[in-house]
Length: 247
Image (spheres, rainbow, N blue to C red):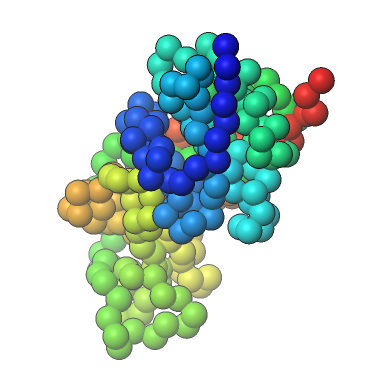
């Protein structure tokens, strides 16, 4: 069996990426790496047949190419995953793997080729709709007259003419997903505003034809509780591991 690992352009593997996203059916948090030119891509061939691809970016500096974050093989060829992964690592010289735990193939490679790994973030998907109400609270788009205070979020929560929380939807992920972010001003925390704005951002995403999702730092218990209260549920983890030298 002849295995070829060929550095290539994104357009050469775009059809394979479409299959990767379709088969996994989740928000892929590194999708923007391709759109912004932060990644190198490698095509896999077995006996001159296209069977998959892998992608590499910089774990700490975008200009580096030291981390494998995407690894896909067509059905029927995944039995060769370990062999192809080793060949890819030798070609690109990556020393890290970053994987979403709901990406089973790359996560399998992480546990197979990394002696140690850890979770950096928690990933969330929408689970159920909520119907919280806060008397006097108005969820709206930020206007040109609102004070910025270093915050350029598109949406705000207005209570009595004062902005108490803000947030938005990041749309640079794979369609149809939209990533929710939010923050509550210090004097107004623990009053339910964060949960309420997440609820309304979810509603906004669906109106836009998007599916809401979110993530937070692994140690941010407050954000995790807020997202879960607003109807999201944990669907995976963002994992990182150092590749062990192949013998």
